Length: 413
Picture 1 (spheres, helix red, strand yellow):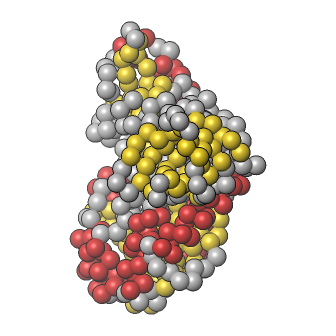
Picture 2 (cartoon, rainbow, N blue to C red):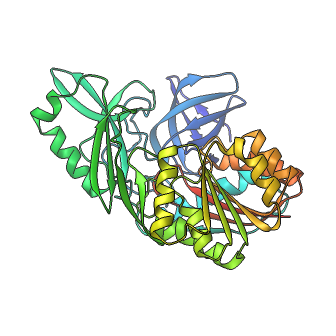
Picture 3 (cartoon, rainbow, N blue to C red):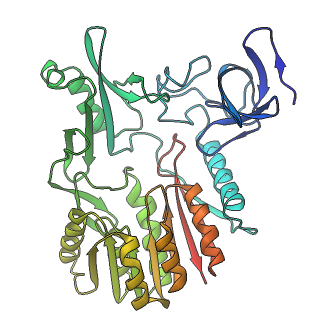
């Protein structure tokens, strides 16, 4: 559809799609136009704010013809028409303006599109959706930036421009215990006086240990906290990676545990194992050998303690090393149809050395758990070229109202 440009900076356009990452997509002057806070099919009045070689960025000034799926955001800081998302709204949530059922449809379409376009998968199995049991108060960790402005100090989230800080008094997707502590800090002169401009305050909650806090990314306390999971309480280092959703156990961990019980691998290698959750699930599901690899030595120590507590030490082994370094020997010793590799990498996906090891000494099946659908799709293309096919795909919506989600993809030879 041709846009109607006015004599001012504004123009009308129709939203054609919602891209992975949350921005709506339109076309103008032969270029893609990305606009946050909109829904496919809507006609809006927009204003361009940035022009790049291959695409432009705009903001939604008003909605001319709204989607029936549009709803009022629950958070007063969420993006609304007429607000510049680059410095005037919180960018943590991308989908508070649409119904949750439609959010799931959008995410499923995005995942299927990426796997087809980047992954080159011609015939994709039906994507199973695991919806979140709740849309709010699920994050177990938040980081808040302190700013001094107008003679006062305040805590908030960094805006989309990566410079501005939006003051946050209450975050609807953060655990209630974290919001309570945030309110206490914000109203306490003693707490605020101990902070300086630019400090980053981390708040971390677990159902077994309550709220911990620290200032500065490298200053997490050296203590372990207790996380409650579907296989029992496990120890996790306070500053180490763990799924940030309180729904992880009932959604992601339970689904993986069920898949392992059905697959019943004799050998399991859990790359990027953290504190050992999936290696322990494998051992509990009957694997004779369950090996975990993790680069964080504190997490490895917790994994060993968790195995000891669950009386699984004789079936598990945990290695403190980078997955790319350990993969060659482990797969050389444990490849074949009886072996399942569990991959739960960071958003950047798998390194080439690990991919090569998986192809050179292939396990019978690969269970890939991804927080980046784009890098999963990239890696899927390489795995398929190495002889694997996608057997099943599940979209686990651990992060409702945001643009993020987890994917569970099972590959087999």
